[in-house]
Amino acid sequence: MSEVVSVETPEVLRLTVKDFLDLYLSLNPGHSLKAKAHLLTHYDLCMKNCGPVRNMACLRYEAKHKSLKAAATATTCRKSLPLTVAIKHQLNLSFRFKSNLSLFPQTECGPGHVVHFEEHEYFFLFP
Image (cartoon, rainbow, N blue to C red; front, side, top):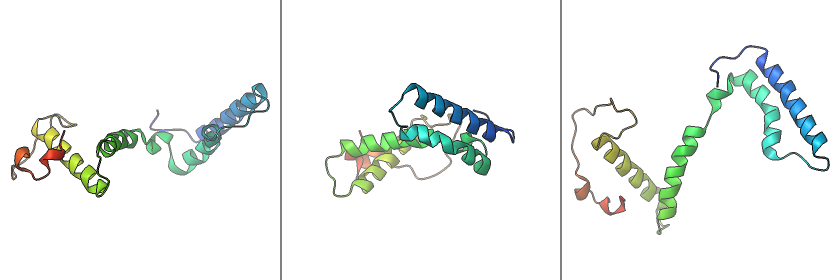
């Protein structure tokens, strides 16, 4: 995906999407558009107002949500689910930093207080 688009790009996109949807409807008579196909009609306005569509991508957020959802479904107690998921997330992040499995391998942790996982009161939640 491009980080920069020309001024004409939204209009070209609008016409291309219109042609695509007209062709789809002509090849599939009796079928209506699905919601995802309809959303394509709004991309040109988004590009005009917000710039390249790349700036509005949510793929990384969906990937993050997947891991949090997995932690939530693995928990049998629903009494304090947000707290449980938050603690699991923090412990997992601490583990990644401690074992140098961080997102950025060149990241170094500065001086601070070392907490041993075994001594943490919520250690039993960590897989």
